[in-house]
Image 1 (spheres, rainbow over the protein chains, first blue to last red):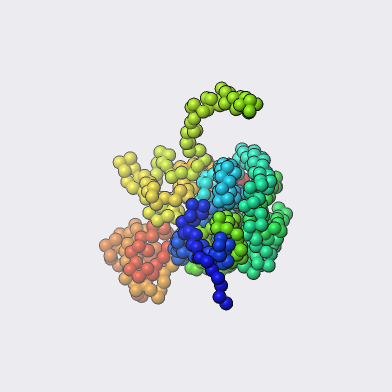
Image 2: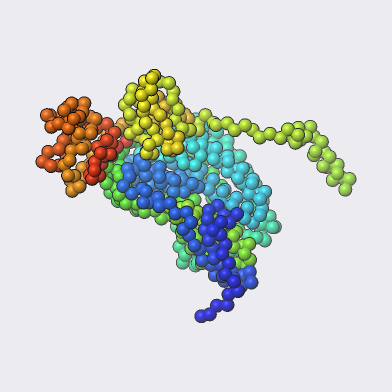
Length: 362
Length: 203
């Protein structure tokens, strides 16, 4: 079949609105996009190859350096996979602290993604407000773990640092401010007429297309699929009564709103954790041994899975990481971008699926 | 028109606003006390147990050197990843970083080490470099330091019948000298690190 294509336009690899390099090649007629392809490979680190043959103590720190934005979940999935291999039991207090730090990390990742979208649709004021709010979350992360990005908080058999009474008070006070701020910004985003013009009905991903392209995370939740959330299979989240949220619009607006709602949900989860936080030890000990496992957890962008094979001394013999963004980029380029009306919407649609290229290429 | 002018006049003629406008200044950058920075020395005496070097996950980030004041750990800033494991591991509290030391005391956490030496018998050609280089072997049997024959079986590593054998793994200090001196990469040392937190027990 012969297609009439006016011109084929590459966007990227370096684009002022994107956080990381990737190239989207759009075939357009006029300004309407007929089809799009993505080209990756601009920032391959080869981190899985570096991990091979190293002891778990080193791989633990390498794992959280896979991605700078969602570093806690990489740490958590790797350590929990090790714990499943060698049957290490985590103290209950440590399990709750893990959830608190993981949800804080999810909050800052979602707020950064929404900043990125607001910046791309050129609503810079809301973007800057969001970045300012993100700093509060980062301050809390730093207060609990001692570092802003690569926290190194979760270790086999527990967590590194305890949450003290004054930290709990500080965290609760910050959560109140955060909730107020995020609700205000959600209102601005929901009711803004200019934002609606750029977001509503743009880049629609239907539920069938989301299933076909195996979309995960907020991208799938915005299209009405919520059952793929890996947090539903995590014992601590099950104790907290976690129910994933979903929306039915499937456009850029819905994806951003799902992230805002997840931030509010994370705040509620952290509050629930703080209420239920049991007393007791935070480190149970235990030495990782030999075995192999495929284990997955819910990163801010969707399902993150690790396949690990270790030897008796805890060295990682084989490792392979599957990150959520590869599915979301597929959904974005092959389904969302089809029929997007203008080239300005191509960048905003690509950003709304929150692609993390550092994760994807590893 | 007049109303909006009045509004702006009210907005700008406030003393607070004018002060902020004329003396715009960002708050000074302060490192918060809980930030986990590069480890620093507390001034306590280092006893040269080298546990910080064993715990460190980043290659070449820390070493312990002899200075006129005694042994001292030295941090190489470009290599250090600020994980703080050396601070947790040090039995004497020589290093500090953020509030790790404080929280170690508060949480009553204890780190224990053990080591595991794996010899790949397929690759080992029995050259004995590991047994000669091993500093623990030298302390036990002085003959080993100049490549002599082993006189006892108390050694950590011993070559017999053309293969390297690990006799007393509990004596290993995790220095990895054997691993660095093996020409065939047949010997590998792994550190098994375990931390246990016991709030009831007194320090």
